[in-house]
Length: 268
Image 1 (cartoon, rainbow, N blue to C red):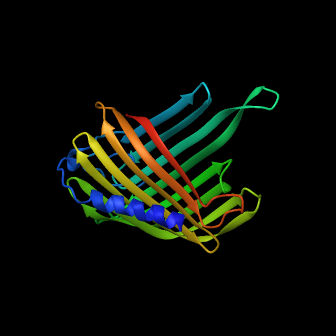
Image 2: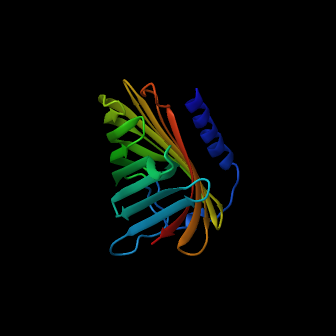
Image 3: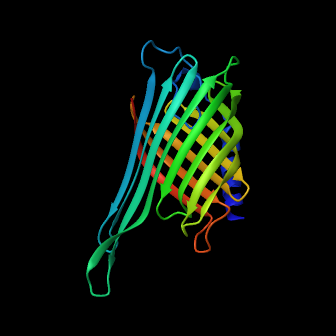
């Protein structure tokens, strides 16, 4: 029930975002997102890479001592017929605890790494594509310590305006995971995803992404709500809320993990 509430709020944010109508979205260069989309401007000759790197960190001292770091590298290669995207992200958190004998030790309380690659072949009609997607997550403290997926399918752009766009995709897939208790789980899935992108103003952009993989034993869902503001031509500030959910988890684990982050994004 808790996870259903989170997804309902996410879709509500996406729906409310679609109500406004700034008009500078079409003039921007293609940004790296979950979806591989045709660029809105003519591709330059040579290597057409669009890359962004983001980093956020929090360090506390005094009564509470700890460090948390989150980062992501997103690289997209645009060609006339193909659009390929490669993503690597990581998050870790360390806390300093005081033992009974008065000594202090630092314990890792969160550690997650994710890598994914996606290739999309652009079909004749603008915005349509056939894709293959592979991803692997290593989450030391998650309900699934390892989770790998492979999916193929079809994607299309349901809406494309000057200031906003909506993309969806669907297709069959396969997953293999290892739970925190060491139990192996695998099987066929149905992969589906949707994304809203909205240019709020010349210096701000909103995005809402939801990805669902429904298998015979588990429903794996990932959602992210993000608002980015431009600092200069290459730097942005990004505030994001993300949620990861699994319907099948060990008894001592919760179904949903959430993360709120504030990061600096450098595009080149």
